[in-house]
Image 1 (cartoon, helix red, strand yellow):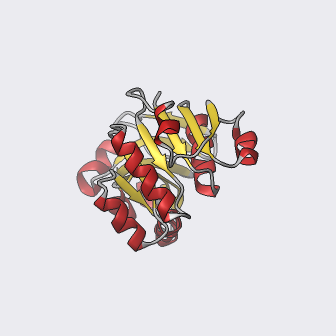
Image 2 (cartoon, helix red, strand yellow):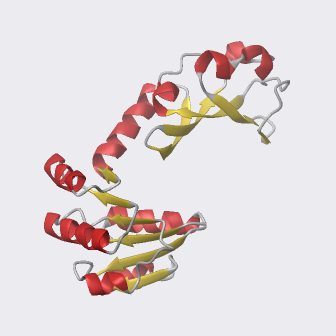
Length: 216
């Protein structure tokens, strides 16, 4: 379990906060809007009304137990920058910040944030990835460089074992589960002798660029 602080509850911050909480993490959210705080208070660990531009407000909630602080106040560059500066002054070691433009992103990078994200741009890129893989069932980004994908098992793989196919050696990705769609059976961390049945789906993990360029 990790501890996160999310500052700013626009659409991105709201969904990020509730998703992290559903995944079993401790999530504290901070926003000036009482209405949005009231709407999310039962969906996260703690919800606080506060101005992140005020370092005294942040100092009440930020300590060494926090793994990551996400500055999701991308609509206001001033708010975003001042919040990041406050977090830096408080000694926060891992800061992720949302940017609304390339210029905004450059300013944030100049402040040495650990990661700058562009939610709309990133969503468009993931959609492009999904649309470019005709056999893709689902795509779950793990980190900037890695992803898990569900891919329909190619017909030429039917009846062959993972050992025979040498998928990791040939394609640089790992099969971490196989789902038999017909019988609704899920085989997690399958044995190398496992033969791939017809009407199945492979759950594959690997570097995003290798996953996107898979050519079975």
